[in-house]
Image (cartoon, rainbow, N blue to C red; front, side, top):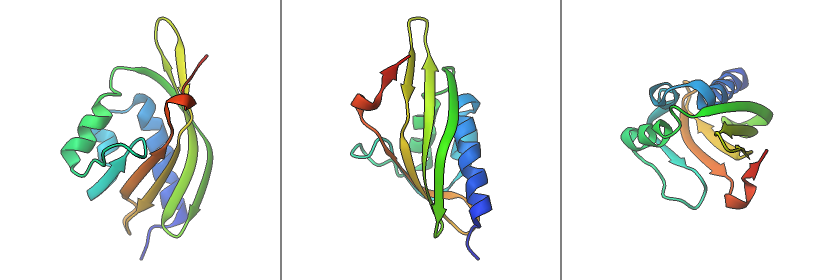
Amino acid sequence: MSATDDQIRHVIERYVALVATGTAAEITALYAEGATVEDPVGSDVLTTREQIHAFYATLEGLEQRTRLIEARIAGGQAAFLFEVATVTPDATFVLAPIDVMTFDDAGLITSMRAFWGPADMTTA
């Protein structure tokens, strides 16, 4: 039995919240064994838990706010737009990537691809 839309929505909401305030371990726990991360699309694809953990570890200690803007869920997959605001002493940097995720039957992420580029980063 595949993950339900409600399970997937819960994982998306948790992911967005953890990007702001979670640890790399908490975010990595949302991923299935063998999952891949391509963030942003066109960069090297991360294929091991260690690589995925190291990627999210770069967020730890940052002052960030996130919010889910829009999500579409169908066929065990999701595409969603969310906003990440990173606060520094000099400015607040805002990025609104579109993430596309696939999920296994247990509702764990099997792949994540983030669509954004440098031109999408703004300051507030």
